[in-house]
Image (cartoon, rainbow, N blue to C red; front, side, top):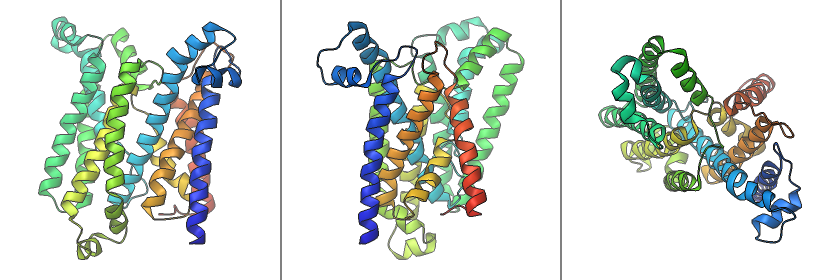
Length: 343
């Protein structure tokens, strides 16, 4: 009971840290805005400069919300995959969803070089990247779901996901080989990931996918706890393994697939956050871990976005590079210090 109170307090502190980090994220950038002005603008109060209000409401607030959705969604996806496969190296893109999304986007950017200019012209529209990325993820998702229905071995599903990732990566490589430099450059820029290119309508759609995925994850908490004891023990508790596995795959696909579609492939967050949270809250109970991972992922993504903005500068760095540069050394340090991951 005492530990549970400590865990609850830690979750509350993480939630407060999300709010504070979000305020700093909105405040800092090429134009630094005082935090009190950010707070006033968000509360609908008078702001010293109208341009500050415009920047906050039309650029920085959507980007901050996107960072929260992206970080929390990928973190929960990583936790689900690590529990399902009982593998500390499993991440949200282990099912090949990111590779499927990359293939869809590659067809948009580089399809003209292989299939002709008319093919690319059909695809080029305001929502072309989102649609292509979503379709690519969905194709891989359906293939993995069919495999999960037929297979009993969870590790076999992991291998199939990796094979789909290799297959789609090979197709992308062929497209890249025949593409001119300009088209290849567009694809590379997409692969860097971006949090700041979404309109309010796109943020709303992304938020709906995120909400459904999170609700499914929360509904699977009891079954996730039983899976930690092994599939045989979970069956003895009355857990429907195939149904549970199906729901976990659906939740991961909704979260990781929609985030990749709207923000691009964001590396590292889903793999690392569950391990970092376990250092703060050494619990295996997913009732505690799921909300903690949601807040932890949001905090990490907001911090990475602050650094990527290079506050006070007109330049910004690729968010994908920042998440790896900051997070990878932390996980290496944890692994060396602990000699193993808590799992």
